[in-house]
Image (tube, rainbow, N blue to C red; front, side):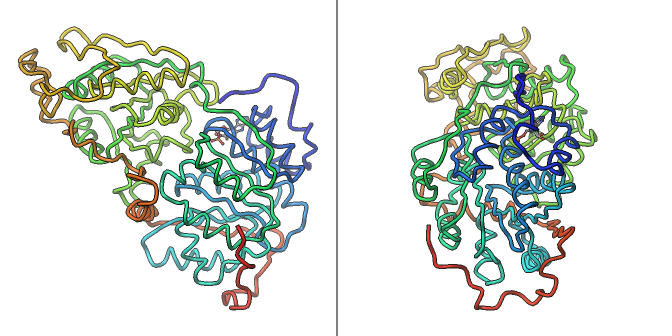
Length: 487
Ligand code: AMP
């Protein structure tokens, strides 16, 4: 994460002492660029549209001024709603509030999709009791709102975090429905890693004369050693094994765009005697949390994941990121690669590019304004595909696995590993996780997103000082229905 070296420090924002103590306890010395720009504007109560990606410190950029306000305004109601695309991000933000809020006495609850009845009841209880900040995925929040006990009628601050991702996941309608039930007089902050047209349109609908902060998609941190290997699909697993044995890998995330690839890659790694776990939306929440926790605790050296993990998830000390396949969007490349070399450390990002994905390399290079080194395959691997960024298909002479005719005879290594690995289908090009086929056909995607909610929620209500709403366990009366719909 880019640290700021100039003289601005957190004291210059006139934040209250308790908030400064919280910042100190988190070990933050200086505000990051997005914090420098956004915090004063948010404290002035302006609406804000901020283009900033994960890893820039954008969460604290809005949490700190909001917590400062909440803890000193004496609100007796839920004042802040933060909408996010995934439960992982919801939980991560909740944890950050817990960190800062410990000193500033601010409570939060995280609401995200799940499939166990008691999660629902837990969330219902937490929402009925109330908290200063609700952090929620849109679908699940809407379901609770429909029951009438979610009290947002006095809301003061609305944050949309990773707005582009929410739209990509088909949450547009849900967002509009939620926002239409919030008070019109509020401060709205929209954070997005990218600013496509649809985000601008949304901003126009829901923000009022917003200030802008633009830390547009940046190049991956300087400390990241980025390299590409041009490989046929059947060379990927052997290459991965080779790299794992050659490099000093403390902790590695392997990203794949296809969730069907996760388990086969994990199985192959285990056969190679590496400790690995997979994380994908096919797993229950418990399984995913266990895998993530095991990885954080260094029980496993390797995690294999879909793009669920590429944004918003903070894992410290990650030494290596491997893109087992080229991400669909150049921006996803930046997000994936940004998982390493966090907080100014160093790391390596290795990307496997097959013959069908070469055109994506140029898009990435244009975005990050830098040519990525294409490394030769190890000698005994035989040749990989030649670099041809103009090419968009696998070529009619390739087999479905990407093998050149006759290539299988080049080295038994390739041949023998071929059938053990995942079987990426060159021609089917399945839709990557979390990406709707087209805007508007979002129902199946929403269903998938809801499924990601899993179980094992730990929703909390931490009304430390105020003990508010303690007599209000019976749910909201119908009369406390939200204010007149306004977007
Ligand atoms: P984010 O971009 O919000 O995902 O933040 C990325 C990481 O940077 C998180 O681990 C934060 O705790 C950390 N962070 C945020 N602000 C600062 C800061 N001013 N100094 C040091 N680390 C920070």
